[in-house]
Length: 164
Length: 168
Image 1 (cartoon, rainbow over the protein chains, first blue to last red):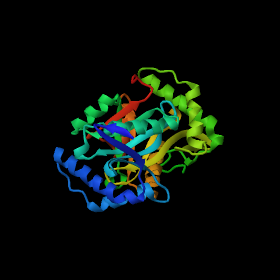
Image 2 (cartoon, rainbow over the protein chains, first blue to last red; image 1 turned 135 degrees about the horizontal axis):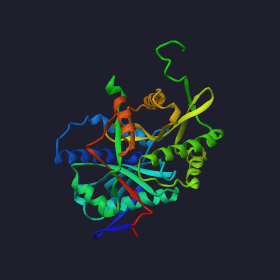
Image 3 (cartoon, one colour; image 1 turned 180 degrees about the horizontal axis):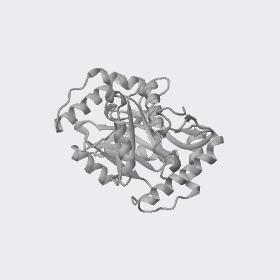
Image 4 (cartoon, rainbow over the protein chains, first blue to last red; image 1 turned 135 degrees about the vertical axis):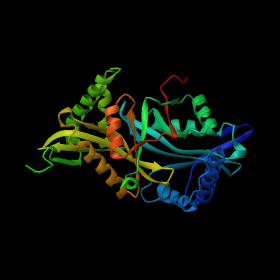
């Protein structure tokens, strides 16, 4: 248990039983991003894919859930890769979301500290993630944490099917 | 094939690397560092760090895969990658950690063979997106990737958090 404001936040590894709550929050996350700029319709069916990614026979990511009084207030999705500057394990954060009513109470920080401690246990020391450039609040939060914008590196994306 | 229009292309074969390839891989990692150091800001590469690749790729729980390119049995390049996810499409995604082609074998399609192989691995896993980073002082690499059809993902800001950095 960690304190968020005057409430106790409990973090635990999500299970399949949490899927309805996770999908609901993933939808809220999209709604939140859509209030910032350029609303983009999202096919609701994509949220069903979380199940296979996180709880299938060969999971590609792990989901942590934050709860207050047993109610879900946020989630963190991460996976482990490598970085080839120091040849160590690296943790990639795929998604971090805290529900509207629970923001600015330290829950994001609790998630990030959890991610850091998972990585340390694996012998790594570098975390990576991306932030939408319109999401100033998130960028400020991560910078306060001690993260940097890695601007010497250009992030490339390739969707080969789109080209052909 | 001699005499064909492909004569400038090397007869390259790509295969999954094994522990037996570690000496060649480490040698190429050093060559890669030398290549980058020739561009700007030379930084000594600690051989002890390079040894970390063994555990990452061939330990009890490998975190990445290495593919090696060979021409007549001699190593000419390597690619390090791992599978993660992409939260735009909630799908598997392939992350390229390193891609290197030895100096004598550049501009002969070896990089493209690696990238097409990475694309096909992504498809086999049910994904469609590949991610990687390029040093902003390596315009040649950037041009290669753009030519391939990849784009800088400008809407996103890449964040890095070094736990052993200046944070107390």
